[in-house]
Length: 302
Picture 1 (cartoon, rainbow, N blue to C red):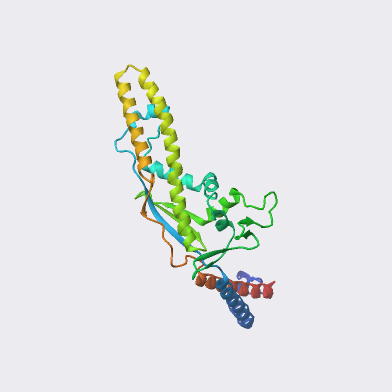
Picture 2: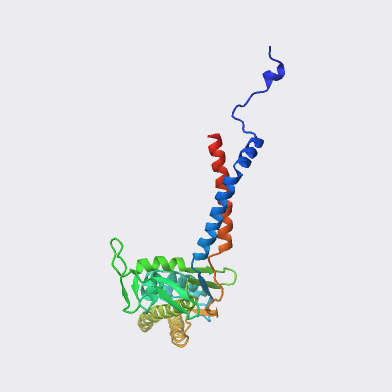
């Protein structure tokens, strides 16, 4: 007969003993060490062969174009197509412009911008020269010779450039201070600085053109309305908005940094921003060790 102790204690046949796990791992320690070591050494060589990337950054703030609050005239201003946004709204607008496809389409019209985005191969730090992939772009004749992808031409489209551009670009807005930090990452620190300078300059120029065009149309409308109304208060409101438009046009023509003002201009970075080789080696080694142990246990139990 079974004792009460034997009847009350269930027996789990599939229960895994921790000591058994340790024993299995210890028996296969050589295989685990070898596999982990091979991956660790391989990760060292792979990380050393990876190309360095450099990030140029700039800290920007929006120029406050509004000296006197005009919110009481916002209804009339909206009818005229006048923009009375605050500097915060201007920053949001500028960020949207910089990230847009149309802006990239404009940027790649400048010399060497498209090849530097799409065909950069290596960078010589001593000569500070950027070299292009010879299988994609001929730098001597300045022609594209890549094998055309499906449904695309030999020369990369602005949509392809926008995809690479989005990976190069970082923008962070500090809601507390209102500052924007913009960064461009590239294998050439010189191009990163030059390209970021171009982005800021052309964003200001594009916004200037948009505002001057909008202001001209608004002034035409407001002048017409001013001549047709006899109400003193309406005349006063229209005159105030017209004055604001003249001030805006003056700012657009005076300042090169029309909206985005550099608190800290783009610089040529001296230290690489990536890859972080030590992190790559450590993570590869740890993951390889864990996978080796899991493989040994799986083969033993299953």
